[in-house]
View (cartoon, helix red, strand yellow):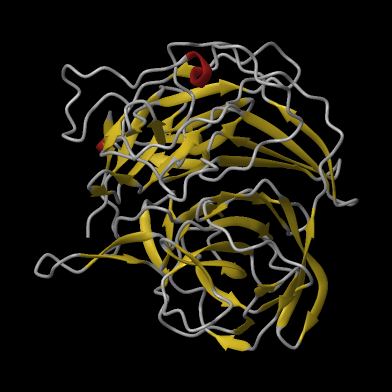
Amino acid sequence: MFALPAALASEQPSGRYSHCAAMYQNHMIIYGGRGFTGGSSQKRTLTTLSDTWALDLDRLTWSLLDDGSEPSEARSDTKVVGSSVDQGTKLAATAGNRFSHACVMAEQSPSGTNGYEGAMLVFGGLVSRPVDDAQATTDVAGICENDVWKLALHGGSSADDVVTSRWVAIDVVGTAPSPRRDHTAVAGGKSGMLVFGGCIGSAAHDDVWLLRPLGTATDRGEAYAWTELARPEAVVRMGRQLTEPEPPVVAAAVNDGGARASGSDEGVSPPPTTPAESGSGEPAPPLNFPAARCGHSAVGSVDAAAGRVRMLIFGGREPLPFSARDDSWRTLADGWFLELDVAAQLLVDASRLEMADQPQLLLNRSDHAAVAVDNDLYLFGGLYTDRDEDTIYIMKDFLRVPLEYEGPPAVAERLDWGPAWRFDHTMVLAPRVRDRSGGGEGERLLVDAPVVFGGGGGMDIFSDIWVFDMAAKEWIEVSTRA
């Protein structure tokens, strides 16, 4: 394990979890989340954050793009009213404070043909503000939203080309998804966004929505529209999934995947795996679509030539149907491929990721992060609820899952661990990261490198950055200073 030299920037983001992250021009863009505010001389306060930052992975420097305090272009306040959308009035604001939302880099145009070089779309999540609207959808942790925001990004193509950003006005017309949190989204082709799942309180969703630009504008801004995608007649690939109801539990102190809350691994066994939960039992009844869930991961790929988008979701949590408490859930271990025909705006396939039986390897997890490299899925950390022990574990593992779509059942592999165990972090795939840990002996160029930022770990909220060297199979910590 090595440490990269400290970044030169005098500013860096505070520790956070439940934020979102996306890649733009070899910069990791992060927005929002939950974290502490207040310096060392003040009492720290856990709050919902509204700032946006860019990490230059060539120079290893942070830059503050937006502190969330200044008004931006006007936008429409999108709310669900029955099955329709009330566009409301024009508001002058940034996307504001937000957590448990989703964001995707929907556009990247080096030529700047759209007046900017990139566009990050943000959807839903929880916000912290006074409830002054009778139509507001509340959740135990805040107000749950179904609004859409667009962050226009400029620059970043070279060391001298500084990244800047601004929130721009969009007008979402027609029917919209219901408010939700802990959902996932991937780029949906043609500057759009594909969304799956999410929760509100103890209810989970299994719907799929496509947001796309209409190529027109209104007096409120660029026009976008949602389409709910119908389920396809899918060929089911056999896998394992919990289907039987089980009694609710009371979530206990947070633990890692082998260590108790004290942080010590000594004398403590890893969380038990039962045949049903580890995937080693009898097959569950065949399903042709992923069950409702939230806290899952999603990775996407766009085949522009074929006009197809593939979304792979994995794991997540399924709130127990007879529990009113949001912290009682079943942790899932299944993976699904969803395939979209962009032109037809139709889901054309929903197929299970076939997993081999591995009783000694716990795949069940929620609130984790994932990236896909070539034909492999990499899963990092997350949470696992053991209902027999009434305990939540933080998963201290890093897994590789082969993704042969028409091959034998996937056999997951546990890789070396580096960062502290955590959940609600982000992991992005960086085209390149410059490793200067050799000092004056030159630098290495890490290509297609997973980058982990932030997350929670029991009483800790992290602001650290870790990069995985795919060639050496080791984690490298990126050091920063205030």
